[in-house]
Structures are given as structure tokens and as C-alpha cells.
Image (cartoon, rainbow, N blue to C red; front, side):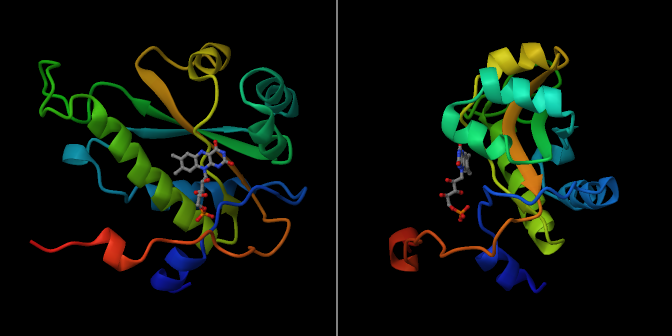
Length: 179
Ligand SMILES: Cc1cc2nc3c(=O)[nH]c(=O)nc-3n(C[C@H](O)[C@H](O)[C@H](O)COP(=O)(O)O)c2cc1C
């Protein structure tokens, strides 16, 4: 798929077929996402693919609101995006590099997640970034290592239907100014 077309046609996909996501395909997506830029090439983003139906059901029941549980309940693979803490935006002595403080690690995750989503789209998969969930509860349930934090949940699968109309975008005149 041509890049401009991929950028324009990627949509948040919230309904998936019952087909499992082949590991080789998911690995291709993660390999492509690894090319995302990051603070001093720290590459802090990590991906945990949850496929166990019992674990997915537990997440739906206890760690996400109903509207996100409906999405996760219909996917075969939930990618939990985590990041290695205190690298991106930090000096070696642990101090912040800028007044953005610990914000750069979230920024890096966002770039990685969009690269992931575009790569998934190019390979015929749909995905949606979910930001509303019980982060601390889920970190405990999934036993996320001490040095990492969950950034986002990304259900992935084959889209159940062709993409509908895109939510409207602001015009360039609203987004860009010159000085
Ligand atoms: C950081 C972030 C958090 C989001 N959280 C949710 C969410 O919790 N639930 C959901 O259904 N969609 C969520 N979305 C998807 C947005 O609603 C979606 O990207 C937006 O409406 C634009 O639609 P599009 O992705 O199809 O272009 C999130 C997107 C981002 C980038």
C-alpha cells in the first residue's frame, strides 16, 4: 500500500472476525514498528500479545470499561503496549533531560503505536489504540515487570467489515500557522 493511502485509510477498527492473528504476521508488524524514531534511539516500547481467552475475559470483566470490553471481547489478540521506564527523556543519572520531565517516554510510545497501527493496516490487520483502562490493576494482574509501565491496549485482528466513513479531520488552516 502506498504511504499516503495507508495514512488516510487507517481507521480505528473495533470489530474483528474470529480468525486468529498468525504469529508471523504480528511479528512483521512489530518489526516494522521497531523502525519508529525514539529519544536517543532508546526504543522503549514493548508489546505483550495476549491470546489466552481466559485472560482476555478477565481483562474485560475487571480492568476496562464496558465500551472497551466490547472491543476486547471480540478480538483474538490484545497487544498490551508497555514501555521501559526512566530511559526516554532521562539522563544516565536518572534526572530529567528537559522540562518535559517524564513526558518523552509517552511521546515515544505514541509514535511507536502509530507506526504499529499503520504497519498492521498495510498487512491487512485492523487495530485500535485504547487509553481507558485500570492501568495499575492491569499491571498487577499481568505481572508487568517493575521497570515497565503499561501505555496502551491495542486489540488487533482481521476487520469484520470494510472501514466506514472516517471521523472528520480539521483543515490545514486550523492546524498550521506561519510566523
Ligand atoms: C491515545 C488514544 C487513546 C484512545 N482511546 C480509545 C478508547 O479508549 N476507546 C476507543 O474506542 N477508542 C480509543 N481511541 C481511538 C480514537 O477514538 C480514534 O483514533 C479517533 O476517534 C479517530 O478515529 P480513527 O482512528 O478511525 O481515525 C484512542 C486513540 C488514541 C490515539
